[in-house]
Image (cartoon, rainbow over all chains, first blue to last red; front, side):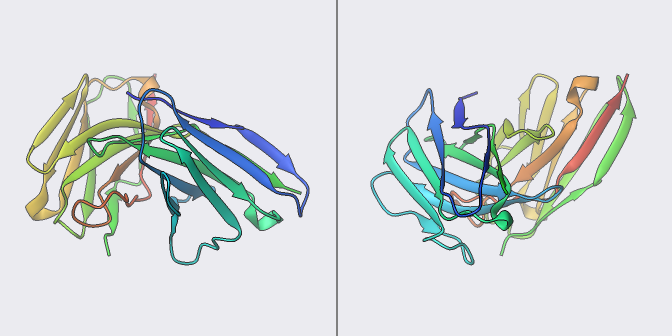
Length: 114
Length: 113
């Protein structure tokens, strides 16, 4: 299968700081990437759809000014959690969609806000 | 709104057994459905993508079937191994050919040596 990477895999930060997470599709070009968050023992929750060269589409209830998404190229999307607070602590996972509609997921980023 | 139910929620079996994981979804007007596995603390690994024109898709010991009319998909795992232990998730699109996927809570599988 295709490979999607995420960086960093784990980050701990102080409340009020901003954290950037990168998602890269390593062996295919992805016009569309997705960002999810997952709480312990819960389903994945789609946060936003990231389209290369255009603004992201956010799901209802997700603050776009809080979670900034940039899809600068066909292989890179970034999620920036701005002014992070403890309630933002979660597991963030990205996925990239290939031309046949198959989605490939990154390994996830564990964010802990102190 | 697409809703996904996976049964059973958890399953523990001895090594070597053949097993079936069930997935049902409410909006059957879908173009495809994807099965994933998730290991604890990890991302998702794509197992199979089955198109609506297909009734089955096979990869190694895995076989997925899709019955759109009844809103069901099953994942068959043959000759289970301890390394198959993970949570299995089925994900149909939000609707039709939407690129957004909807996830259920998954089936947590434990294969005992």
